[in-house]
Length: 300
Image (cartoon, rainbow, N blue to C red; front, side, top):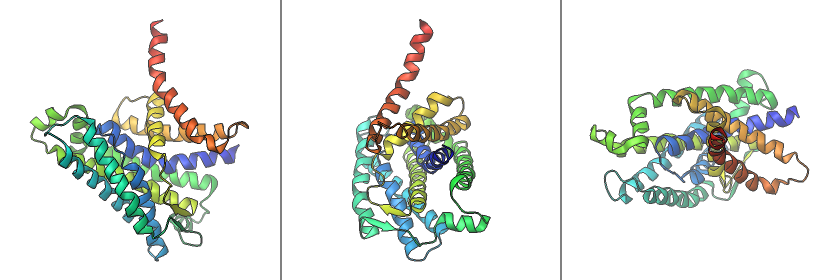
């Protein structure tokens, strides 16, 4: 049971960067960004290719994040070209821009990788190098502890960003774009920055997951957007959304809760690994319906 818990927490911390990115786009920017389906694999592909060619895994991971940020910028630029007016609140161009970028990234990722799968077995990865520095083997609870510290560092960096002038502008765009535009804020530039930061976080998850599991696959990002939304929604329902600082902890907690629920569900004998997508859909449905059900019960 403890091994299962350690594995679930490790997966939760690995994917919490992606969940933070989804939170920035869906909640902060009010931008349903589908680029995630391509930028996660992009970060993994760039990182894997660089590691295989002898680059330091730390630097390769950073370059993977930069590639993800570039994908977010591409989505932002496409949206600017597609939207019909200065303060377009229609979700159509937002969805289409993400779909176009994600579709293009499938080919880009294949070009980068040269094939559909790149094994990293025998290569020195981020976790191997980190374990050498710390003098421990990066597995089990040692891996969970290391990922916890990395998660806290990234969380506080995102928290700091959202309290800067740019971050406040990003939050204002999601709340009332016309109001923030009247204050002479360049919303196009701010939105592109937000999309770049979000997809850099998504690419970080891709790079770390590839190194932790020992390979990069062209289909590794299938369904991650739903998992990211599940983490965001579960976190908000379970832990609340009092302040921005707190909601970032909530999102991380939601990522952990989602992975723990999946791990516990798969321990049930009649649930098969192929039922994972159905479990995800059920968790999201329950999380979405919980607030409304709670209000009805309170009125009764």
